[in-house]
Length: 501
Image (cartoon, rainbow, N blue to C red; front, side, top):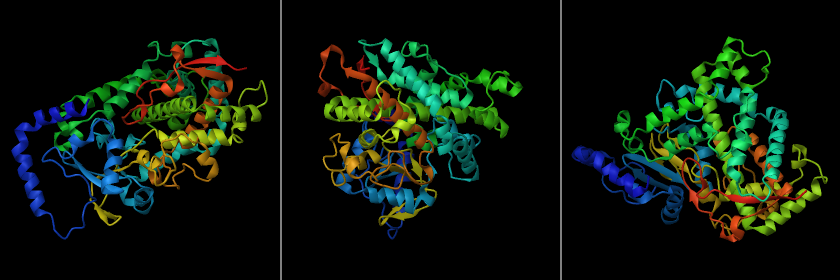
């Protein structure tokens, strides 16, 4: 929904209650203590709608421009909600490290099932607080699938999916393909294998409507990305005026159906041929209910597929637009990998330029440009300003990654910058580079994601030459962004493979 449409809808729906809102606004303004520490600076809000008309369709860009005008920590009113945005390493460090204890609550969109207090404990990413249940769930996931040992044990499955992708692309030599659709299939099948020993989609069916789960996941993300009146005016939450909660529940039910029969069989004792070593078996052994398993898998699938797919697509687009970087990466791969060998994960350890290319992609195109929204569990002081209790808190990692005071020529794709400072990492300790976040809420699956990105990208570059349809020049690639929960390419990358070896 465009910003203008959202504003018109808001005005139409709240017109009858404008007098009540107006007098509430005056009372709050008069009752506020003049001695209270100030809020972070920001643009002056309009009555009732606040700063909603200022936001547009790309909030991460607008927030970055406002930070240049008002400072690294700003505040805005979106409807009745106070939003604080950090846009510098110092501000990010205050939120993700110094005051992480008070600012690690999670703001949950009204459309999500996790907004319901009776279901919130089932969520992995949207639990209200970092409580004991959240810690237990995170520990289970880390132990079973996200630890270094677990990720090492998954290498054979990742390698198999990479080989299948190479084989399929070889059969499509000279034909135009949408690279994101094919990468998505590989990531989805990898996760399906480690979760419950099942693959969902054949590569031959990618893009032809056979992969229904893909469409349901996309709809789920789209629902959470749409402007929702209930988020701007929480007192409207129970009404679901735009039907977004209903749409979310419908898409979620369709996703659950993808593994419903598997779960039922495991409960009954299952197929004797089914391996007893996957994540589903571990959850059943620990007494997880069907609802807990459904919501956990749904969140892990959505988070794991779209973020990885988007990063690989952005990396390929940047490399094609920067042929010198593509050539350097290809030379490194040719030097480190014996001719005729398939790429295996041990090869990746010595590919420093590959690692630099991935880091540079994540700097320019972080999958979650504002991370997931936090909420202040209690009021605290940050950089001399007050962040009140229940304020939403964002960290604009997109803006930090493009800040000219931090990065030389920040809009230029230059992997060499990470070779010069090879210690700069994405594990949440370097606050000028936070593609996976930091603090208690740092992405639990970052190690798995990075392994998948490195292996897939290495295969695409090592095994194929790439060109654009209709003899288009790489410099003509459209690099516009589509903002949502995730930052995707507005126009999918369509390319033509040619086998190198």
